Amino acid sequence: MALCIQTFSNVTGGDSFFKAVGHPRVVGAAKALIALLAAQGPIAIYDPYLLLEAFAELYPLLGVHISSVFVQNLADVGKIILGRPARPVSDLPRARTRALFATLFDVARAMDHIRQLIPPGTETHSLDELRLPEAMLTNSRRYLDPLNFATNFAFFRDDDRRHTRVVTANYWSGYGARHVRLWLALFDREGRTLAQREEPAPPGAGGIVIDSQAVRRRFALGPFEGQLFAHVIGAAGHDVVKYALDLFGENRPNSRARTMPTLGQPTFTQDFRRPATTKA
Image: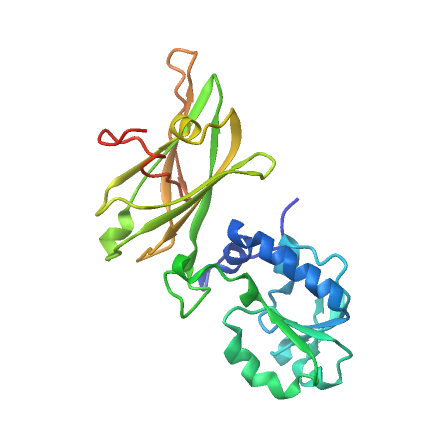
């Protein structure tokens, strides 16, 4: 079933919100936040950029008692958001709520604009509780900067008959990027984490190869089929990560599958990659 989220706009380009809230590092924090909101209800929600429904697509707000949803833009007043008509934020002082959840990152400035409207004693929460560590951000001043989320998934498997290989390069160096790093995680088909690692990218436009056989040996894994997630930290120029995916069948002659160029990310350098100069 398709998710009701925006991933791209012809006007503004790629949308980094879904990457930010869907990042594997924040899943635990998101679930903890929802549990907290459920325990504090009824709650009011301040949704100035209409991000609530996209957030709820990834993290259903089960058990959360929502009293009202408030918006900033008058054109959005009356829109149905999670089954409730949106109210103007000027109505917030009359809200019957014990907590306010703002669907915002970098929330401080936005909250300063409405702080006088928040009922006394109301506890406030925001998406800043889902922020990645500062060390993983390229631009810490603007959290949803697309360069903070140069991320994607690649199909990855390894068993006794088949294996995969992901190939890319540090082409961000051509845009002036320095000290590019790669945060990588391997998930099985059930979404369980099999391995994680953060490593520096090769200097300049160096190539990066991730071979599933090397990963399997390095982490003493059994056969697996799942997804390789990569987050490029320190990217410059753009947040698009191009890679080629090779599929191999070990026991059949001439069984190498076609190389599949795609947009996304890969890379498990050093122990994950297998250049001629590095041992797996």
